[in-house]
Length: 461
Image (tube, rainbow, N blue to C red; front, side):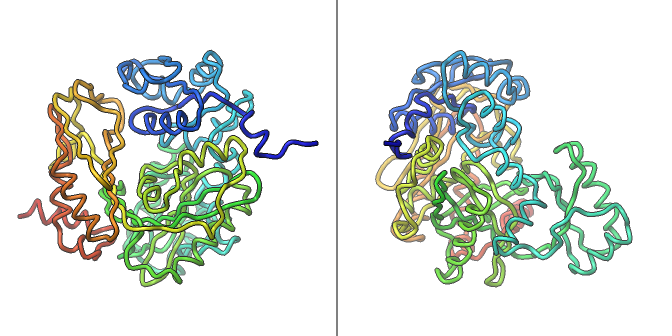
């Protein structure tokens, strides 16, 4: 009698190598241990004292402090997995998490990549092919062609006129807010194209660009999906990530305020359909711009998101565990009808940076006080005595709150921020405290440009 997926799934692996660092490494380790899996932690020379190394079953240093020689070194990571006997690799977010070549190398090495297949990453990693796939699935997209911009200047001018100014030029292989430029009028179009092509070539290895309509006052809305290998997929509600500085998210919340269920539901179902069409596995996030009651797809993140906790707290689903179980081959244990989102959640990214200039702040944490209590969660890897390195992203903790209503969640976040202290280094906590006192933010009257404008007014005051 053949085994069912549930019976054979756990045989795929019992040990996971976590190919990442910082708070997400600690978060993944916790999920693995709760599932009864062993963990292998890796580190660079700069991270030898990482606390999650002490609680891992194996802890291996794979290279020097610079990310290129450690956390981005595919051969070193695969060697560590073989040495430690890991059967799977979890990439976390950033680093190699959306690298199709790495996902393929992991599978060819006989290991399981805890994420989508290399082909899915490749399709959704190229913004042009992603847009084409989304249009085919009925997902609403930003006005603009689903093809790369040609070299002919006259054709480029015609495309821009058909879309209508302002337009935005984007790198096909871009992400993280890089490789994009707004073009307000025709006389600066070709200069913008030339500059963005060169940026794209240097940053992403390809000069391929595409053009879309630039929406002037949109919100940034995300839809979280989970899929298994057996044709099942669900979406877990939506998030608002509009509070951004230089295209980098600062505060996220779930659900997005003021969006009626009958508006968001068809979009969520279209995202699920898109996943089924490309054979997507694991967790992923569809990112949209939302303006005047309409949604416009911009990209899909084929990995775990930094802001996944706000969806975990509102949906009651452990997204990291669901991601791991999907990689093991388990059948998704919930249907769309099982998904209910309760209350409201906020996440603040606490960064080691100056709250005025936003310049990174490295050094030793001399004092640490973290809030606790009902509806408060802190995801972090730091402790008193921890040395914040200058080599990596400045994120040192995520402060997440949950409450029955948005107003109550905002009040809870104010209190949680008031009770958070990090000594020895500069952090953005004073900036976050001020932001949560802002009236327009409290009323939900913001868009993706609001935070930049708010900061300009503060500096001018």
